[in-house]
Length: 248
Image 1 (cartoon, rainbow, N blue to C red):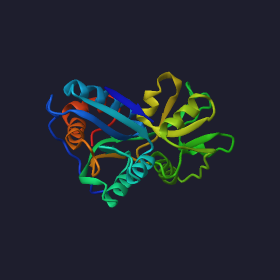
Image 2 (cartoon, one colour):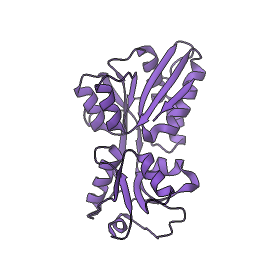
Image 3 (cartoon, helix red, strand yellow):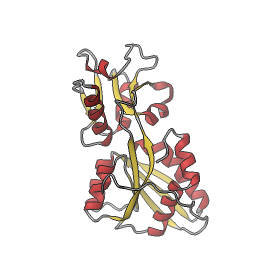
Image 4 (cartoon, rainbow, N blue to C red):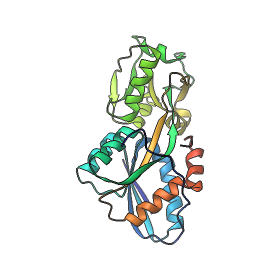
């Protein structure tokens, strides 16, 4: 059963064999960045198919919110972040087991209404005063990436609102409550026809790196390690690629 709820730059990339079937049982609790919702939900289904005696419960939210919850004692077996900084917070609090492994990459896009009716062509356009622009809050990885993109482009953009996670950014644009926002390309794609994306050039963009680790207070470390093995292995990497994530 799968259920869901909403260090440093030297963190290594890793590839390990997929977990063997049938060796794991019990509930595995995974705290994962909101941008991983669709891909990790499928990974959870795949995990349960391989381990029929196990279940996976997800908590999807902003990486900064999740790490705070874990440090404060929330039960989690696995933590997957959308950035390295929040993973470092977990490690610095002695709440991680061993070295995290980077398992995926992502990039940002400008998210706009379907058909891009306002003709937003690039990051510089987001500085226009008459546009309603939203980003994630500064402490959330997608908000920190947005700030760096604006800095790279040499523009000053004051968001009209700061959202709690990237899904909220996409939702506001899809509901017409904002003209544009900065979101991950994977979330723009996941929204389907509800929004459109405007590519951000590589020289302005920021590559998000996603690390994963077993938590020190895990109550099912065997299950947690098996889930991490799935994410890092060939099957997990293929699923992540299908949802638009790049290889680590």
